[in-house]
Length: 179
Image 1 (tube, rainbow, N blue to C red):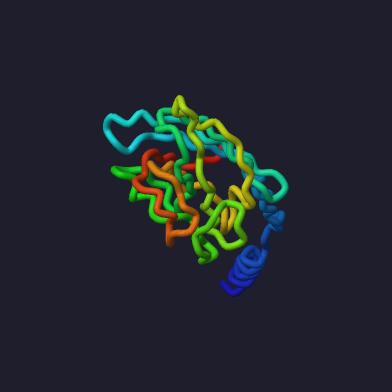
Image 2 (cartoon, helix red, strand yellow):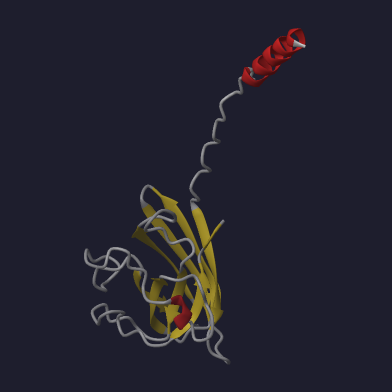
């Protein structure tokens, strides 16, 4: 019996120690950050005719914002990126202005401003707001705007009232989505 136990134990021991060398797992590089996004606007109030699209293109640390909006009353309308990407009911679901740096509300060109402060969108006498503005920022990352919402307000942003410029009710809202 002793003769059979030793070879069997040796085979078991050697088999247990043998292992196959596996190739290291190499992670795929992360996908490139999006450079384009859009928001399709919907209206808050029954009877309102505000509708349109907003396109965003990121290049060299800036975002070009192109608006194609109609159905507004002629004149200026507060225009902001809000912190939550939800457009329900009267659009208060979108939260306040997107402000990851904790700054005061201001004009789109001011040093002290929310990331989401875009100034006023001007509607012509036919109620159309087709314009292009450029803002500092990014579509993705900690201060990125993808997943946030964009709001067109019923009234003019006065650029000074805190915390939101006294621009009145939210007239239209769209969630900013990568393209």
